[in-house]
Amino acid sequence: MFGIEDIPKFFLAFFLVLPIISLVHEGGHIFFAWLMGAKNIKLTVGSGNVLFRVGMLEVRKYYFWYGLCSFDNLRRNHRLANILIFFGGSLFNAITTVVVIYLIQNDRMEASMATYQFTYFSLYYIFFALLPMVYPGGSNSDGKIILDLIRNKHLPVHNTYRVKWSEDREEWQLLDEKRELIQAFPEETQALEKAHEVAQQNRPSRLLKNKSGEEFEIRNYPTIPL
Image 1 (tube, rainbow, N blue to C red):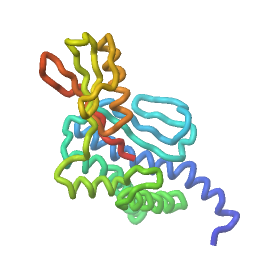
Image 2: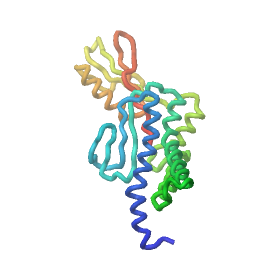
Image 3: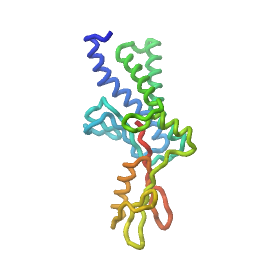
């Protein structure tokens, strides 16, 4: 039965254990993203205004609620690579849970409320991450994305944006998937800056540049694993 003496234990779980579990989960996504050649990796803990940044780590005001990682330019951008990235969070949660249980069973770690909460909420995290469902906010769970990747022959549809020079109008143009004009710029740097902004806001996306009649990818923005 939940009593008054259990209230401090609840706050311990909410403000300390859950953020650690979230950090482990996002670390799993980041590890496999790094393994697949991702660049500009960033790990965000919490939500709200940014408190501080250290390297790739960003900690926000409500550090105990939510977490995500983002990255660009996935070099190995194939189906298996994406499956591993989305599965990585739950895998790291499972590994750390097994390690804690092993250490306790072999008397190398003392069983406590903190270790109980860690294993309990890690399993909770794994369950809801891998359950194939659409979250209330509209985003897909890791399990839903993994299932879609396994079922489909192709990766999720990417938005493709192009930056090219128009000889006729003498301007740099940002084009969408249908090669329709989004915006025109007098300078290449302006077009590229806007193109990165649009592509990043519409993940998953690819950004192409036309040079001497040939197209090449200058950046891709994969879906952000949660």
